[in-house]
Image (cartoon, rainbow, N blue to C red; front, top):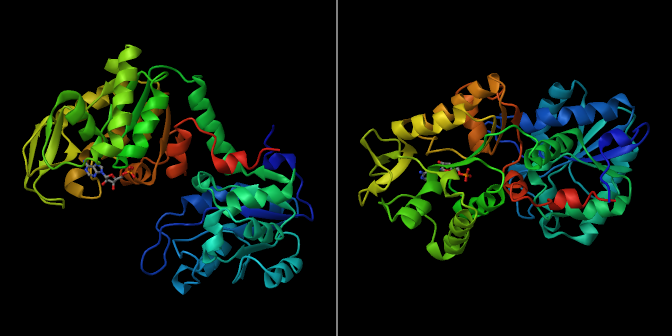
Length: 404
Ligand code: AMP
C-alpha cells in the first residue's frame, strides 16, 4: 500500500478537489485572528495553479450541525483569500449538486473556486456514502491538505477519496506534518528526548503517555494533567484543582504507572514542584505559591510555580529533542500565564542552539505567539486533535483513506 503525494501528479487541465481546513478563528467583525492554516495551504494551491490546473477548495467552518447558517458561511473568506493568493477567488453557495458542477465546468486554468461550508450538510459528519460520492463529482484529483481534521471520520475525509481510486494524494502541508511526526517516532532524533504535556484534556492525553514511554527520556507533566497523578501517585492534596472523574481515567492511570514500573522508567515522568493557586477560576491577584501536593481545600492550582519553572527549564535546556502540547497553566489569564510563557521561551532558546522542537495544539502555539517565538521552533503543527491521535502512534483515518 502506498500513499501518493502532490508531486506525483501533474495538474495541467485537471480539477483538483482540495480538502483544506479553513476553520480559522475570527473575531466579532469576521476578521481572522490567526491565518496559519490558510497560509500553510498556499504551497499546494500554488503548485496546481503553476501547472495550469483548476482548484476547488472544500472546508468546514464552525458547527452548523447540518443547518444552513448565514453566520457560518465561508463566503466571508473570499476577499481575504483573493488578497492572500493574489488571484480572484470565486465562491459557490453550495458544495454539492448541479449548480456546483456547472460552476466548476466554467473554471479556466488557474482559477480557484471555494465551495460553501461542508457542514451545512449533516451528512458531512456521518461518513455518508452518497454525500461523499456527490462531493467526488467536483474534481478529477482529490488532494487532502487538512491534517488538523485527519482524525475525523467525516465524509469529505474518508468517503470522498474512495471514489477517486488511485487519483488521490496528500498535499504539501499534510506531507510535512506526517514526515515530522514519523521522524519523531522513528527515534532518529538526538537524545535526550523530552515531551511536555499540559492542558486539560486529561483522559485523551493520558493515552499519549503510554505510546511515548519507550523512547522518551523525560516526560514533563503540567497544567491540569498533573493533578490526577499527584493525587494517585503521591496521595497529594490537590484542593479544587482540575481532575477528571476517576472512573474515566483510573484504568489508564494505573496502566501508565505499572508500565513505568515494569520498564524501570519511573524517573522519566516528572511533575511540577510548586503551583500558583487561587480561590477562584479567574484572573485575580489573590494568589499563593504552595507545593503541588499540598493545595488547601477551596484553592485551585492554575499555574506552575517558580521552582517548577526552574526545574522544567533545566531539563529542557539539556534536551536535544522536544515535543510540546498543552499549556502549563490557565495561560488565558495573564496572572497564570508565566509558566507557559517561560517554557515557550526556553523551547525557542534551545532550538536556536540546535535542538529539534515540535510544537502543536492551538494553546501552545498561542503561547509561543505571546512571546513572539512562533517562528523560533523547528516545526509548528497545525493539528490539535489530530496531533493527539498521531501521538498515540495511530494511523489517522484521513491518511488511511489515501492508501492505494
Ligand atoms: P488542552 O486543549 O488539553 O491543551 O487544554 C488547554 C486548556 O487547558 C487551556 O484552556 C488552559 O486554560 C487549560 N489549563 C491548563 N492548565 C490548567 C489548570 N491547572 N487547571 C485548569 N485548566 C488548565
